[in-house]
Image (cartoon, rainbow, N blue to C red; front, side):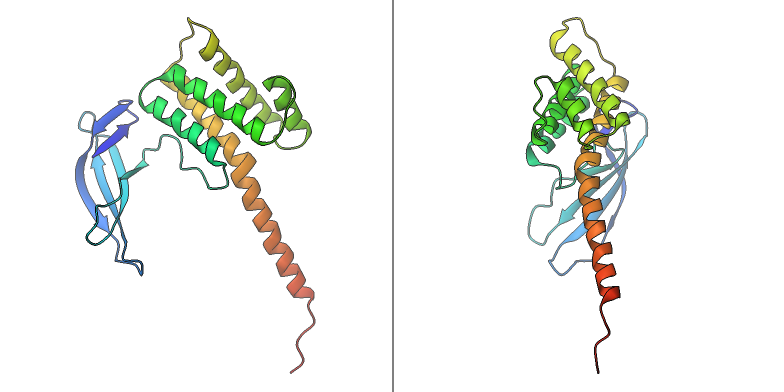
Length: 206
């Protein structure tokens, strides 16, 4: 079972220690959790996959340690694809490529939100003015933009694992704030408004 060890910063053949299976559910599926460790440094790893009768199980998903995140469906497919490529680059130690893909994801976010303003810098300012992002997220997005520009255009640019990991974390935060949290807040507001309407409803006559 292949996994990514964040301590060794590389893909390793994880050594299985033990596993735990849930009961079969109504859809004849069960979850399997596999506890393992890195053969080089003993760092723990945790995997999960779904199993079905008479079928090949799903490919294991690494739950710990995480590199990147499984983004919510509220994030558009094209942005999730760019983000997943950034994660793949980080796993492969292609740190310059990671920075480039994080910048590409940022550019895709701006296009998706319709903030067309000539340059990416101006488009990000437009997102802030419209309330899509705040000052802190603008600072993070600006750092991603500048480092992504260096990665794409500066031949001598060099980035460390920490640089690339931070860039991916900032990209994650931007996507979750703009899409996932906004979607959850809209649903939260809808629930609260529904509760308020029901509270004002006159009691039924028996």
